[in-house]
Image 1 (cartoon, helix red, strand yellow):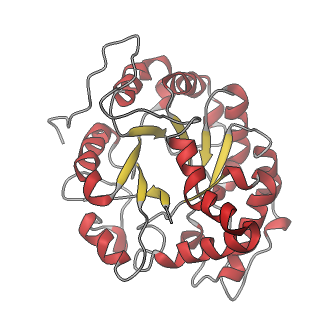
Image 2 (cartoon, rainbow, N blue to C red):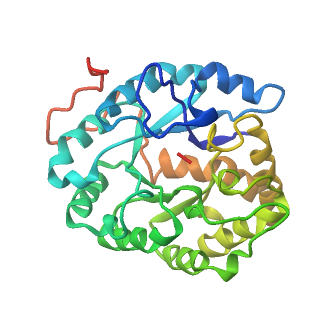
Length: 311
């Protein structure tokens, strides 16, 4: 069965700078560590790498580094960083990314920004250019920012958006679960889902749990996402190594079992592969071979590493 993980991180602090890393995450997570984590289980057949918040000045270096590892890790697409708040000045960066064979989207993480950041005129201007480029937008926010994503979707209806990690709701723990329907997160997620341009990743919830988690604790959140977005806009994402770095198969098994129970085999297969395929690579995403980058109004060299060197 095809399996597309739409949310994979890799990093190497010896190669690039990641200011946010600490604790057990502050070490290399590359191809060898990825294979070791999946040893003995059925790993995804393909994945989409999502930028890992390295120093923004190294964003193109990150793309080049991951491109070099892509075949080894089964990476079919890259969601790169770009500073959309630069407005019209981000055009050259977006052209450069759009001309890079594996790049399928952009993530400018919003979770640590002030409320209203995504509504700013310069961010909206950058998002309009992103939509024109044909690249997708990964929105990483906290629950209080879901309304900002809705406002961005309204301002740029041509921009295909996927919400990372269901908007990072508080999920409690296995012993002290949280009722998602008694929260502002539920209200705002349902409202966001009214925008047909927005999809959602079933990802990241293990990292939001306060201690051990269980399927029974998590499934109500997946049910809310299903009711709000419908089965065709749900994408499986592993969020390795932020979530379940030692046993990534556990989250996959939880989503697999839930989707099979709620949607049957065809619906489960869509959540685990076809929906992500369509969003990033199919008729609603970029569908081109690496040898034929899109034409643009500017000269767009293929990205190479610059000489200077959840999430």
